[in-house]
Image 1 (cartoon, rainbow, N blue to C red):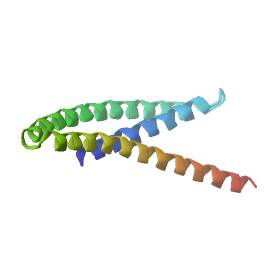
Image 2 (image 1 turned 180 degrees about the vertical axis):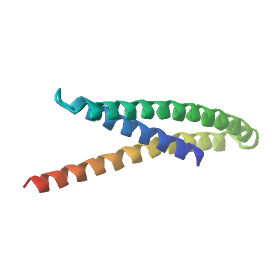
Image 3 (image 1 turned 180 degrees about the horizontal axis):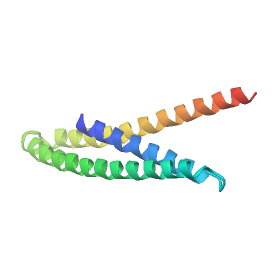
Image 4 (image 1 turned 135 degrees about the horizontal axis):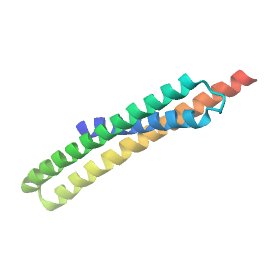
Length: 118
């Protein structure tokens, strides 16, 4: 459960940071100074939060290794391999699901903008 939460947090922060950076890049030379300052501050805060989330991921990874070592003492090799595969795939699938959700959200937003422009 903690692994899912941390992976979702990392993906969320990464996505938000990317959107802020895109917004900064999209600002023209005539954009209001306050807008640039606000976006740069948001970018700084998100970058700090992302670093904190990475540290949290490392902590969860160390805990995962400790649990894996304990589980290894009690499971036969085949079941241990299944357990390790499950943990590995769970993170990958969580990341993939989040990416697909973001793509769906982006597609819906683009569709809404197209409908409004017609």
